[in-house]
Length: 176
Picture 1 (cartoon, rainbow, N blue to C red):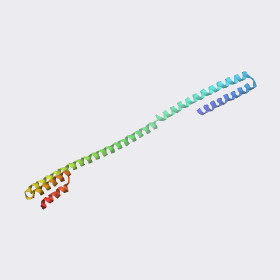
Picture 2 (picture 1 turned 135 degrees about the vertical axis):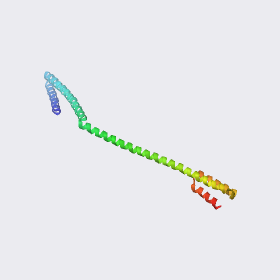
Picture 3 (picture 1 turned 120 degrees about the horizontal axis):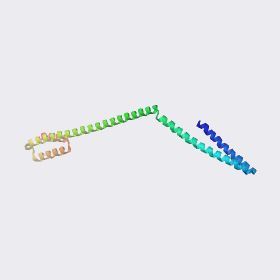
Picture 4 (picture 1 turned 135 degrees about the horizontal axis):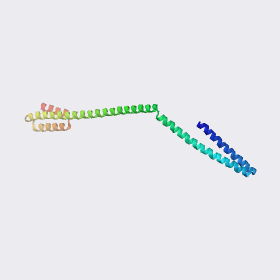
Protein backbone atom coordinates (compact mmCIF):
# COMPACT_ATOMS: atom_id res chain seq x y z
CA UNK A 1 0.00 0.00 0.00
CA UNK A 2 2.74 2.45 0.96
CA UNK A 3 4.79 1.54 -2.09
CA UNK A 4 1.83 2.29 -4.37
CA UNK A 5 1.36 5.67 -2.73
CA UNK A 6 5.08 6.31 -3.08
CA UNK A 7 4.98 5.54 -6.81
CA UNK A 8 1.94 7.82 -7.23
CA UNK A 9 3.86 10.63 -5.48
CA UNK A 10 6.84 10.05 -7.78
CA UNK A 11 4.51 10.16 -10.79
CA UNK A 12 3.08 13.46 -9.55
CA UNK A 13 6.63 14.84 -9.15
CA UNK A 14 7.43 13.73 -12.71
CA UNK A 15 4.24 15.45 -13.92
CA UNK A 16 5.32 18.66 -12.13
CA UNK A 17 8.71 18.52 -13.86
CA UNK A 18 6.94 18.01 -17.19
CA UNK A 19 4.76 21.04 -16.49
CA UNK A 20 7.88 23.08 -15.67
CA UNK A 21 9.36 21.99 -19.00
CA UNK A 22 6.18 22.94 -20.89
CA UNK A 23 6.19 26.31 -19.09
CA UNK A 24 9.81 26.85 -20.16
CA UNK A 25 8.92 26.02 -23.77
CA UNK A 26 6.05 28.53 -23.67
CA UNK A 27 8.42 31.14 -22.21
CA UNK A 28 10.82 30.60 -25.13
CA UNK A 29 7.89 30.86 -27.52
CA UNK A 30 6.97 34.26 -26.03
CA UNK A 31 3.67 33.31 -24.36
CA UNK A 32 4.05 34.72 -20.83
CA UNK A 33 0.48 34.11 -19.65
CA UNK A 34 0.75 30.33 -20.49
CA UNK A 35 4.19 30.24 -18.84
CA UNK A 36 2.75 31.72 -15.64
CA UNK A 37 -0.15 29.26 -15.72
CA UNK A 38 2.05 26.17 -16.19
CA UNK A 39 4.67 27.34 -13.62
CA UNK A 40 1.89 27.95 -11.05
CA UNK A 41 0.35 24.51 -11.64
CA UNK A 42 3.81 22.84 -11.60
CA UNK A 43 4.89 24.54 -8.35
CA UNK A 44 1.64 23.61 -6.59
CA UNK A 45 1.89 20.03 -7.87
CA UNK A 46 5.51 19.80 -6.70
CA UNK A 47 4.58 21.23 -3.27
CA UNK A 48 1.71 18.74 -2.98
CA UNK A 49 4.07 15.93 -3.96
CA UNK A 50 6.67 16.90 -1.35
CA UNK A 51 4.02 17.14 1.36
CA UNK A 52 2.62 13.75 0.41
CA UNK A 53 6.12 12.22 0.47
CA UNK A 54 6.70 13.69 3.94
CA UNK A 55 3.34 12.33 5.10
CA UNK A 56 4.23 8.92 3.65
CA UNK A 57 7.55 8.95 5.52
CA UNK A 58 5.78 9.80 8.81
CA UNK A 59 3.16 7.12 8.13
CA UNK A 60 5.86 4.52 7.36
CA UNK A 61 7.69 5.46 10.55
CA UNK A 62 4.52 5.13 12.64
CA UNK A 63 3.68 1.78 11.06
CA UNK A 64 7.19 0.48 11.73
CA UNK A 65 7.02 1.61 15.36
CA UNK A 66 3.58 -0.03 15.73
CA UNK A 67 4.80 -3.33 14.27
CA UNK A 68 7.90 -3.34 16.47
CA UNK A 69 5.83 -2.62 19.58
CA UNK A 70 3.41 -5.41 18.71
CA UNK A 71 6.30 -7.80 18.15
CA UNK A 72 8.00 -6.72 21.41
CA UNK A 73 4.86 -7.27 23.49
CA UNK A 74 3.75 -10.48 21.79
CA UNK A 75 3.38 -13.62 23.90
CA UNK A 76 6.23 -15.38 22.16
CA UNK A 77 8.63 -12.51 22.80
CA UNK A 78 7.56 -12.22 26.43
CA UNK A 79 8.06 -15.96 26.93
CA UNK A 80 11.45 -15.86 25.21
CA UNK A 81 12.60 -12.93 27.34
CA UNK A 82 11.41 -14.74 30.47
CA UNK A 83 13.35 -17.87 29.49
CA UNK A 84 16.46 -15.80 28.80
CA UNK A 85 16.06 -14.04 32.14
CA UNK A 86 15.79 -17.36 33.96
CA UNK A 87 18.81 -18.67 32.06
CA UNK A 88 20.82 -15.59 33.08
CA UNK A 89 19.72 -15.96 36.71
CA UNK A 90 20.73 -19.62 36.70
CA UNK A 91 24.12 -18.82 35.17
CA UNK A 92 24.64 -16.04 37.72
CA UNK A 93 23.73 -18.42 40.55
CA UNK A 94 26.20 -21.02 39.26
CA UNK A 95 28.95 -18.41 39.06
CA UNK A 96 28.16 -17.13 42.54
CA UNK A 97 28.15 -20.69 43.94
CA UNK A 98 31.48 -21.46 42.28
CA UNK A 99 32.96 -18.24 43.64
CA UNK A 100 31.70 -19.00 47.16
CA UNK A 101 33.14 -22.53 46.94
CA UNK A 102 36.53 -21.14 45.87
CA UNK A 103 36.44 -18.64 48.71
CA UNK A 104 35.53 -21.31 51.29
CA UNK A 105 38.23 -23.60 49.92
CA UNK A 106 40.78 -20.79 50.20
CA UNK A 107 39.71 -19.92 53.76
CA UNK A 108 39.81 -23.57 54.86
CA UNK A 109 43.24 -24.02 53.32
CA UNK A 110 44.42 -20.85 55.07
CA UNK A 111 43.03 -22.07 58.43
CA UNK A 112 44.63 -25.50 57.96
CA UNK A 113 47.95 -23.82 57.22
CA UNK A 114 47.66 -21.63 60.33
CA UNK A 115 46.75 -24.63 62.50
CA UNK A 116 49.62 -26.63 61.04
CA UNK A 117 52.07 -23.78 61.68
CA UNK A 118 50.79 -23.40 65.28
CA UNK A 119 51.06 -27.17 65.80
CA UNK A 120 54.60 -27.17 64.41
CA UNK A 121 55.57 -24.30 66.73
CA UNK A 122 54.07 -26.16 69.70
CA UNK A 123 55.95 -29.37 68.91
CA UNK A 124 59.15 -27.42 68.24
CA UNK A 125 58.79 -25.77 71.68
CA UNK A 126 58.16 -29.15 73.33
CA UNK A 127 61.19 -30.64 71.59
CA UNK A 128 63.32 -27.66 72.62
CA UNK A 129 62.16 -27.95 76.24
CA UNK A 130 62.83 -31.70 76.30
CA UNK A 131 66.34 -31.34 74.83
CA UNK A 132 67.04 -28.36 77.14
CA UNK A 133 66.02 -30.47 80.18
CA UNK A 134 68.29 -33.26 79.05
CA UNK A 135 71.08 -30.70 78.59
CA UNK A 136 70.46 -29.42 82.12
CA UNK A 137 70.65 -32.95 83.51
CA UNK A 138 74.01 -33.64 81.86
CA UNK A 139 75.38 -30.19 82.60
CA UNK A 140 77.62 -31.46 85.37
CA UNK A 141 79.06 -34.18 83.17
CA UNK A 142 80.06 -31.81 80.32
CA UNK A 143 82.87 -29.29 80.20
CA UNK A 144 81.50 -25.74 80.53
CA UNK A 145 82.72 -24.68 77.04
CA UNK A 146 80.99 -27.69 75.48
CA UNK A 147 77.83 -26.97 77.53
CA UNK A 148 77.70 -23.33 76.39
CA UNK A 149 78.36 -24.31 72.77
CA UNK A 150 75.53 -26.87 72.88
CA UNK A 151 73.20 -24.38 74.59
CA UNK A 152 73.92 -21.68 71.96
CA UNK A 153 73.46 -24.19 69.15
CA UNK A 154 70.17 -25.34 70.73
CA UNK A 155 68.82 -21.75 70.97
CA UNK A 156 69.97 -20.91 67.44
CA UNK A 157 68.25 -24.00 66.04
CA UNK A 158 65.10 -23.16 68.02
CA UNK A 159 64.99 -19.58 66.66
CA UNK A 160 65.41 -20.88 63.10
CA UNK A 161 62.80 -23.56 63.61
CA UNK A 162 65.34 -26.22 62.65
CA UNK A 163 64.12 -29.55 64.06
CA UNK A 164 67.04 -31.50 62.56
CA UNK A 165 69.47 -29.07 64.17
CA UNK A 166 67.87 -29.58 67.62
CA UNK A 167 68.07 -33.34 67.17
CA UNK A 168 71.71 -33.09 66.09
CA UNK A 169 72.44 -31.05 69.27
CA UNK A 170 70.78 -33.86 71.24
CA UNK A 171 72.93 -36.40 69.41
CA UNK A 172 76.11 -34.43 70.20
CA UNK A 173 75.05 -34.22 73.83
CA UNK A 174 74.68 -38.00 74.08
CA UNK A 175 77.98 -38.65 72.28
CA UNK A 176 79.96 -36.39 74.66
